Image 1: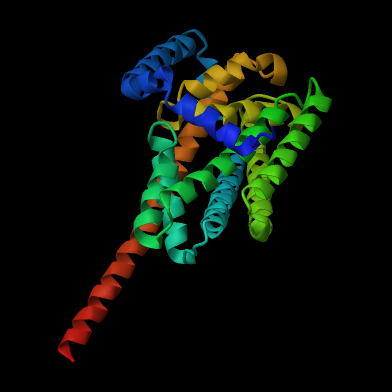
Image 2: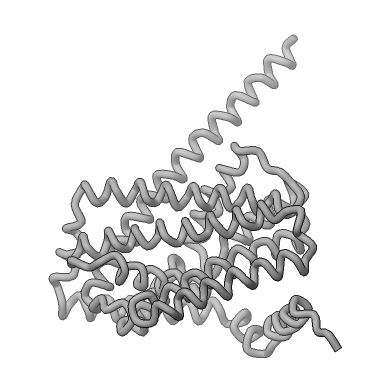
Length: 311
C-alpha cells in the first residue's frame, strides 16, 4: 500500500508536539531560560575574569567594521522583509510594503529580545487580524522557511570536513522542497516557493559574512569557509533559543562545533559580546526610526481627520 510522505511527516510532527517532553519544556521554559541566562552570566564573568583580553578584543572592532556590520544587518533585515512578502503571497494574500516593513522591524526586535521564536508569533497574530491570513496557512509557510533555513545550515556544518556531505544535504533538501511542493498542490505557486528558498539561502550567506567580519575583527585571520561553518552552527542555535538573542545557547552550539569550524573559545566569547552589543544598538536605532515614522503617520491621519470634521 502506497504511503503519503507528507502525511507521515505531519503525524510524526503532531506526535512530537504532543509528547510529554515538549509539554514539559512548555511548562518550564521560563525557568529553563532563567537558568541558562544565570549559568551563562556566571560563566561569562569567570571567563572574562581569567581572560581579561577578551573585552579588549571585543572593543577593538573598529568604526570601519562597525559600519560594515550595520550595512550587513540591513541586508539581513531586507531578506526578512522579502521572505515575509513571499510567505504572505504563498498563503494567497497580499500585504502592503509599508505595513510589511513595519511588521518586519517590530517582529525582528521581538525575536531578538524574546525567548524562542517570538518573531513568527508576532507576525502570525498581525497577519491573521489585519491581512486575513489563516493561522494554519501561515504556520505551514513558516515551517517551510524554517526547514530551508535549517537544511541549509545543517548541510554547511560539514563544508570544511566532509564537503560531499554538505552537497548531499543541500541536494536532499532541494528534493524535499520539490516533492512537498508537488504533494501539497502548490505547483501554481512554485515561483513563490523557489523565491522563499532562494532568499533564505541568501540570508544564510549574508549572516555568514557577518560572522566572518566579526571573528576577523576581534582575532583572526580566519578564512571564509571556516566562518561559514561557524555561522551555520550559530544559526542552528536559533531553533532552541530559550533565552533572548539565544544568549548562552549559541555559545554552547559554537563550543560543541569547534572541531568543525576550528575557531577558539576566546574568539567565540569576544565575537559574541561584540555581535550582541552592536546588533542591540542596531535594533534600537531601527525601532526608534520606525516608531518615529509611525508616530508621524498617526499625527498626519489625525490632522486630516480634524480638517475633514471642520469642513
